[in-house]
Image (cartoon, rainbow, N blue to C red; front, side):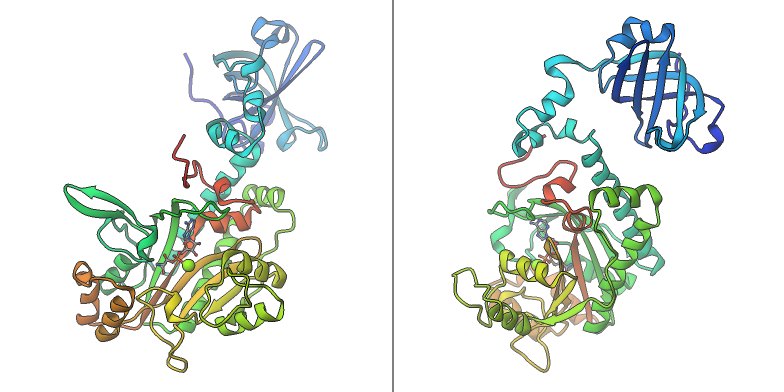
Length: 441
Ligand code: 4AD
Ligand code: MG
């Protein structure tokens, strides 16, 4: 019978001791009379040496990658440069095969590299995830999500869990996923923002990490139909407070993940040029961005010079961010291209107290704003967007029962990871990406 195993990456005190480990064969190499196995157990990798009669057994001779096994043996220290993870290897004296993996044409390596095209890799994602690159991104993702939770709690924020099934829109009707809810119309939420706003009167500053859904009809490298949204809502603040908080949040999370040696090493491997961004982030008003784009002859979507009021499209945004090559807070967008809940700037009522945080390589990672907190202004916002206020009564009520100057933001976790881990597309930062045309595995 199998007992509780030791982790293949147990601490240095395990050296010289006998251990029992469980894992899967990540790599194997057979030489005359000796087999070397790199065993993977999620915690890390360990080199295992099978020698003598053990290496001659049928199971050892026919061992394939991804086979799961139990191994008993002694840990030996080996010199740096011997290519053994953690400078140690296990000398096995006993092993059992638990689950065999096919070799030959069905071997995982052949399946995963079969055509090498993106769609095949996505179809085989359940196997691709076992590889070092894909799994590293997942480990970084876990560390990032954990760091957000820690940082919010250090700041005294309360985590709430808003519903995913809703009857209101937040970011425009065109990307809503509609569904039949016991005969009523409902949607998958685009953002938890409106619900977070209703939580600040009882909890103060709040946050959530939930899924958001967008029926994006375009295939880009940064759009998903289901993504993880890190959203915060801050009470009794100014727009400047909001910008400072977003900057602090992003930098603190990066510091927290970089302070973990295993995670930092993965980031270094995935993104060798990564450096922690300098604070403060560059601040740029929308009107200055329009001037910048005109000066640099970067056209709008109709191939015309950018004008005030234009949406800055993905391509132009990314070119600008890549050329400036540092994080940018792009602020004060015109009301017409932003959502109904954004208040106008007192000095320039054409624009709103809104911000996008742009990162080189990806572009927009965060979208945020102050929120209209006066009832009559909100009514104008609904009207401008053609929204029927009736289903929003609970949101409107926030303005009637002790309104407050407040604001918040949403950060796309997959985009943050694409930037941090230098992944070409957000599809490689999800366990199983969802986008137009793909809903499996
Ligand atoms: O800019 P967005 O649409 O803002 C909101 O949803 C606000 N209500 C959030 C808030 O203030 N609480 O989305 C916020 C972020 C974007 O900056 C982007 O990083 C990410 O969510 N995002 C997506 N990520 C992947 N796929 C998509 N289709 C995304 N749409 C938005
Ligand atoms: Mg946005």
